Image 1 (spheres, rainbow, N blue to C red):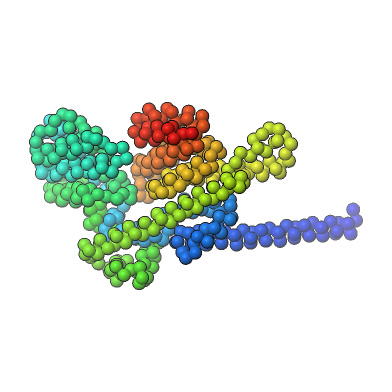
Image 2: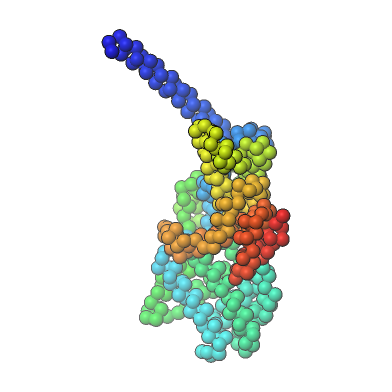
Length: 479
């Protein structure tokens, strides 16, 4: 090969590489522009900005890419949303959100609570004589909470009044019937379980009785003699109880500070808030909010959280519209015959098979995302995800079956975090897993088919009444 031929070959290669680089650059730029528009449309839907319905229609025109972005946006941590950060900061200012307890404080507070529980259980068993006033008060408040939990429970407990009456008698020092004692012991776990989750730092909406209970335990502890070896952890427990009772405030993160500062500087949104005091509080000045001001702060926090949940609901509606459009167009969430059918697969080209496989995997990723979002605490979002999965139909069966059959989370996945112990994190994951199972059972009931019925039928006999009731209802709804 002479030098001239070599030079010509090099020119052709150079030209091809130049075309490839220019083409790749144009492709990347186009994708970046599309991503910019998609994020702008998502932001408009979240904020319910003027003309957000038109932005939603534009987003729906992006088909698969738009749906992927919506699902990813819905799975972002709540702390990434400015409304959520604002609500959390206002909760901290209003004294509703306590600082995280250290491991030692959690352990010490749990010891105190368990001692009180054991004392009441012993009383019910006729051991240890009468309760002192503080223990009797604990029992009375526990009775009020039992009644409250049962009022809010998804599966009503018809004998809750018996348990509440038993606690009233305990507080008065009267004898309790054996039947009433057994009922109370069964339901007392609700009280201790909720308190334990509060100690762990989970964001619970607390009842006044629960706050009163912690304040009472704190008062009782501060009156106990210090230096008692049997209660060597008392000082640590008091430090933890002070945090739970709102005696010490929780510092805002950088994001929460920024969100609250933005609210304070917006005169149209902070009319009903003590904005000047809030700014001083953010600057770590010694500021004391009045009871009325705390009510205003907490009401504004509830409104901020409501805006966040509403934005999640709007995105969930968009997901349902996306899935409906894609199914109607038969472009996604379908059975890809060119890949599934042996005869068609034998005749198809390699590129056709790769494209079909890529689409199938892509669909599966989006369905798994929908299943994960179905574990949301927002009922509207859960209902929309169930609706979307039912619309997907048969292709969603496999991920739904897998989720329904997973009755608990592998403890290896519950890693210890900065403010959660391993067992606390595992409990949170199992609670989310249960919500996902319940949602997936509803979706399976809506889709129907032999696989769905075979999976749901054994769950009717589950020990968990929620799972059993959901399985029975799904079977009745199954076509």
